[in-house]
Image 1 (cartoon, rainbow, N blue to C red):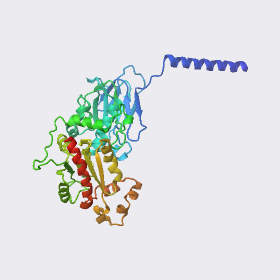
Image 2 (image 1 turned 180 degrees about the horizontal axis):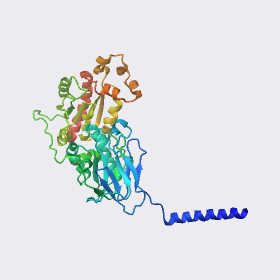
Image 3 (image 1 turned 60 degrees about the vertical axis):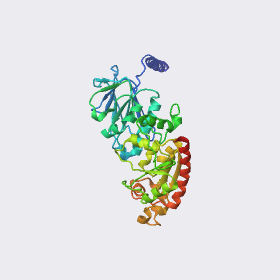
Image 4 (image 1 turned 135 degrees about the vertical axis):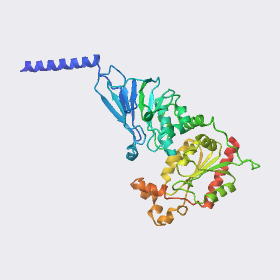
Amino acid sequence: MCFYIYQILISEITREILEIHEQIHHPAQKSPISCDRTCKHYDICSINGPTGLDPTTSTFFTMDSSQLAPLEVERIRPYPRKFEDFIMAQIKDLTLAVGPRSPPCKVQHNAPALVFAAGGYTGNFWHDFNDGFIPLFITANTLFPDQDFVIVVSQAPKWWIYKYADLLRIFTKHPIITMGNDATTHCFPSASLGLISHGFMTINQTLIPRAKTFLHFRGLLDNAYKRRSQPQILSSEQTKPRPRLVLASRNHATGRRIVNQVQVVRLVKKVGFDVIVFEPKANNSLHESYALLNSSHAFVGVHGAALTHSLFLRPGSVFVQVVPIGVDWAANACFGRVAKGLRLEYFEYKIGVKESSLVDKYGNDSLVVKDPFGLQKMGWRAEVMDIYLKEQNVKLDLVRFKGYLKQAFKKAKKFMDNNG
């Protein structure tokens, strides 16, 4: 019996030695595909090695002909709002596959691919930056610092490529590959799918090599738009130059209109500003918008996507955000962080209950008016969002608002004197 047990032990030891020998001399082949799905806002997948793209099937293949492993598949929706099921359902799946079934390569690129979706909320100016260009800036500087890469876009509308052509050219010297309009097989040295987001309108310099910040991002915007932007000429009617204030108008938008805008414009002029009423539209030239904001000294508007144009303000200029009731958190998350990152002179004018049209609709005693935060504890649901963003207009208290304008004027005048 003891001899039999001894034989078994010898056999087990021999088997283990053979397994160790096999692992040393013939290690298991590591998959070239890797995915990080640990972040709240985004997933990132990559193919570390030669990669082929078949746009007709939205599939990225490994191109290593020696790869004899069985087919391995990962799928990703490369849009950085992973936490939002409703919008992610509208983002197309892209496939990463290991195996010998890659189609023949027709266009060979010498730079890696960076792949993302321009779907979802694309078309809303704030989302174009929050879900698109700011994560693109973060990803480019995190994964490809000082490196060349090719942008590959899924679900990109034609207008998007045209509108942002000059900005996209700052990121890459290569033509943009749009998967829906191209049936050609492209090949790359490697590929990364997905965009890194640090949160709403956030660039966390501690997470990026060389500590990139919003000021670096604005420098990128300068490179895209300053070259062709004509400086805006201040009114010649004034014997002395006056600071220019741009007032963002929502007269043709749904909700958050300044119903006494005519009186507000008159007040702004009385305080000492030259005023330009700016009503952004989808077909606005970004070069013209940039020229207007970049040459101005103050920017005022009610919380909304148009305030994304604050990215075009020069550091040190004045930004006043009018905050309707019920949107305090969004006001800071969407634009307060940008103002801080760009080192703007930032003010929030939080309207009083009597300045909101919701009083007329719901009454002074309604929770909608009295306790917006309590109403939102259950979540920023669509019906709640509609109340505060779509049903609400503002009628500014001219006496109270005048105090903010006077502060803004002092800051803007000083900025103009120092910077032109």
